[in-house]
Image 1 (tube, rainbow, N blue to C red):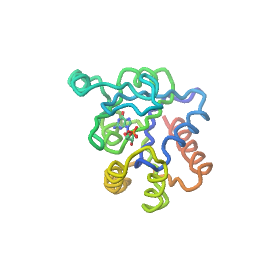
Image 2 (cartoon, protein in one colour):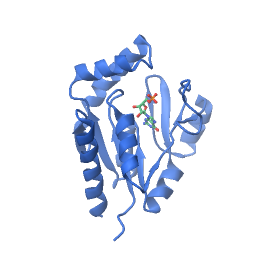
Image 3 (cartoon, rainbow, N blue to C red):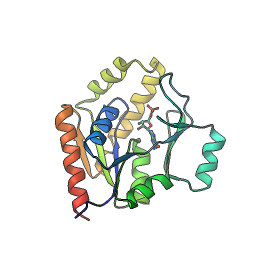
Image 4 (cartoon, rainbow, N blue to C red):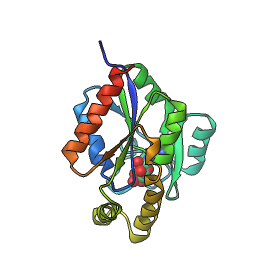
Length: 189
Ligand code: 5GP
């Protein structure tokens, strides 16, 4: 039997290593597709519009919200982020695994919009380790790091609302655990 399509959210605080885990999980799933989010954040120098995000201004984002075009959306550290609905829903209907890299408020909206979705919370080994990772990444200035740490505290407090909590201490083990959870969820239709 072909496994069913599935919407998978892998959420967790900024700096937990979400990007790496996402890349590894997608590379291990031949029928995984990436959802490209819409955001009002400015592009970082290495980011390409339409590849990393669709970069839009606030009025354009708000028009998408009003038209019901976003499956979920949230404000995160002063910017808006959202998941385009049509592409994700079509891919799941087509039997694909759609993996969303989103923050926690958005993840919990997915629960309401798509009750069959699998919600994975990626947690750091400790808060101190999260802070160290965020500071050494060097993509944000001090004020932005401080804002992200404050958000992270609130996000960690909501981990129990997820289907599964996976601690990202050892990358291989963490990825294997996420993949096992996805396989089990697809089999349990
Ligand atoms: P960054 O600015 O570092 O790219 O992303 C900041 C946060 O926004 C990350 O936690 C990321 O997972 C989250 N994010 C990215 N796209 C979306 C989205 O479409 N919806 C929501 N709710 N969060 C998103």
